[in-house]
Length: 291
Image (cartoon, rainbow, N blue to C red):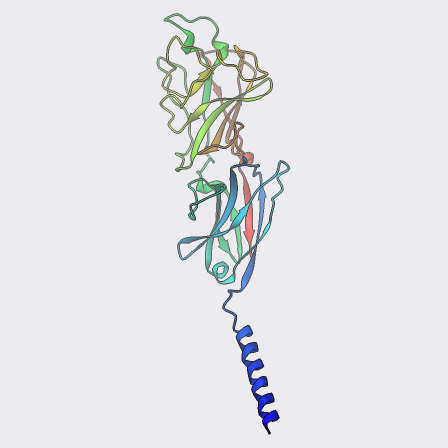
């Protein structure tokens, strides 16, 4: 009789343990798959991070990197199934690595609402570039002392030439975490003209300009001093490609970011001639998130 009681107790204990194992409080994991076109590799101190918006709050779906071929280090992520079921939107941000802040950074690149478990992602969270336009002219005001030196082919400025020049961009005001940057493609790659967020004032730097006087109240640059490696100054801008990019702030790279909404080619005439940018909206990244 005692043996029967012992066996019964053992069966009860096993059943209790099994019941505890089945009553697991771990949330069920769903699978989120990401796909992107046009995203580029970041510097060593940064990663991309995905977020789903649940009840108005961001929930991280994990971080990843992109290599020089555009391939993601990871495309599939385990996410709490209840969070996926309640998610209304997906957002992609650029984050420092390592990152002590659990919230998304200001540099949000792509976003899109979920519909039937799929979110089509675009750069609308950065701005609407569908009407992007602008113009530029060749002039070298920073080496002049009241007289034009006859070397206006060595500088580029953004806007309409005049005294003073006036801005001519049709571009969205960027949110925190982003800035515009101008570029001229030199003999060995793009050379910055400086970053800016306002169109009616000088940009943030003039590392290559002359020292005789300040530049005009529009972004731009003269190319006289401190030539980058493998470049020869003064730089003749005529016939060169001129680009306006959208850059993350802070910026981890000396090269242009993937988003280059405006591209133009400088002609042979200097100011008062001006040249129009063309739209380059195909450079804007896109993607999808699905579960």
